[in-house]
Length: 137
Image (cartoon, rainbow, N blue to C red):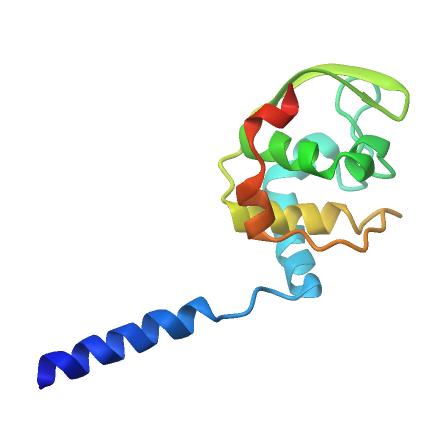
């Protein structure tokens, strides 16, 4: 009987944890701001403007806002080669920072809603998990 009770309680705990709600957009943006400071600010700068011709801007970036899944893939897998951002070609390397799906979702929500960027979307860890490297080709 004890074993049945233990199995029942364990099953209940696993089931209830799977029902946990994801972060709200504001919670995700707050977490993303911390991740941005830890991993992104040294290249893309505090104002999100990057370095013209060397490091692409995130502020008012047409690439970011029109290619959200490519931007996710760049964070998830790293990015190498030419991209065009706001009519300027950038040909550099952004290495994979080792972020997990939740961290990528949080930092994406942050940069999509900072420096004049506005996005109605909320990026979720589930969406990040579905983005494959092949999208970068």
